[in-house]
Amino acid sequence: MEAIVNPTIVIIILGLIALVSKGFYVLREYERAVIFRFGRLARGLVGANGPGVLIILPFIDKLVRVSLRTVTMDVPPQDVITKDNVSVKVNAVIYFRVVEAEKAIVDVEDYFYATSMMAQTTLRSVLGQSHLDDLLSKRDEINADLQRIIDQATEPWGIKVTAVEVKNVDLPQEMQRAIARQAEAERERRSKVIHAEGEYQASQRLADAANVLSQNPTAIQLRYLETVLSIAGDKNSTILFPIPIDLIQAFVRSQEPKDSKEP
Image (cartoon, rainbow, N blue to C red; front, top):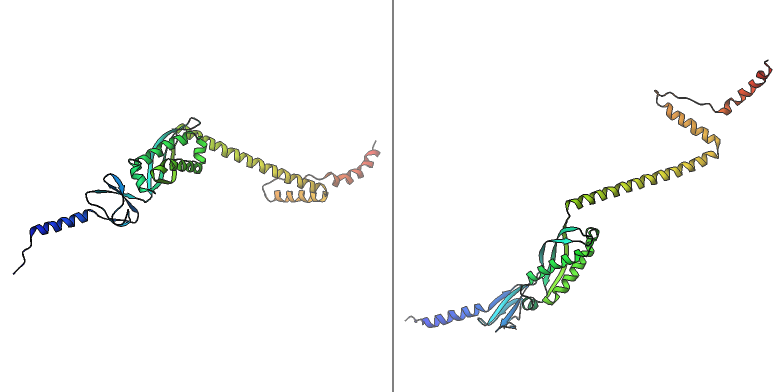
């Protein structure tokens, strides 16, 4: 004879299963649980606050999951007036993570929103105390200052800011043209300095060569002949070959007595 299953027992068993499943959680390695029991912070019955299997009191405990992974957050573009009164639009990216889950839930209402607001205000404050040239050339120093200031502000919330990077600096059109003219003038200055340095070095070499040639007249004549040969390489050239005066002095002297005897 088949046994008769009592419906009440079935309902009770199903209720117990639902009750147990309501208090049964599995947390991943990067997750932690913040448990409130009658409004107060508490620990799980099994597994404390994770990771792994976690059991809490159903309908009594309230569980909030918190991720400990690094979060990448874009800071919206901010209108900034630099210390030298230049209006620029700057945006950045911030990297942070939760290091104390309980503080991130209890001490601040929304740590994502609070960290974003803190990053925006700090970005305007720090860049407003910097010159435009420093903003463009000393980006690493500014990033380090931003990271340090924001990290100090978010530390009471259990948030660790690992890095802050300024992404884009949008300059007004007139400022872009002024910077372009400045860069062009700088390149022209360098070109003139390099050219003048080359002329100076060449003049020094020519002076050294002249000193060497002046010590040996034969070397001057050889150099003279070499120059004539190089010019003669072009068949269409007409060469005026000046004769050194010392070559015709003997002829001139031989003619002087004859000229003195004429009436």
